Length: 138
Image (cartoon, rainbow, N blue to C red; front, side):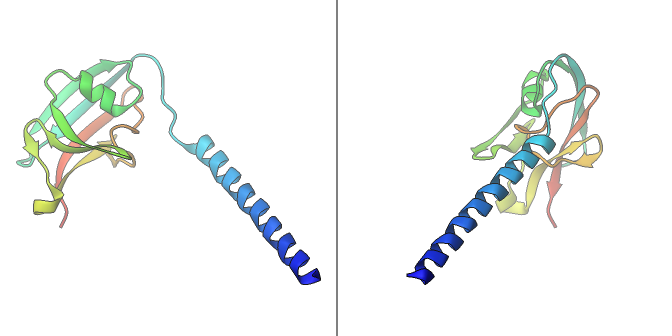
């Protein structure tokens, strides 16, 4: 009987510790995750296609995330697949990138750095320079 009580106490302590760890990670995510900036912003979106040609779009927007700014960029056309993580870009300005065919994909660069988020989660700040780059994984 004593062994059962000790095991039950260990299980309860383990559950409490797990809940504490989950709460800690949630708090850290909330504190350090990118925050959307409200208000008017001026950004650029450059598309670099499969031939290395560049097309530049200057956008004045209230968008909080890149996808919204892309939708407001006059002349920029894009489509993709909606996933649980947001939009996966498949086609930009008529150029299709199909990873399953030739290892190609559209990468998102933010201020010269490889983006860490997709178009739906990438925060837009005033003065940002985005690039949508046709990239082939080798």
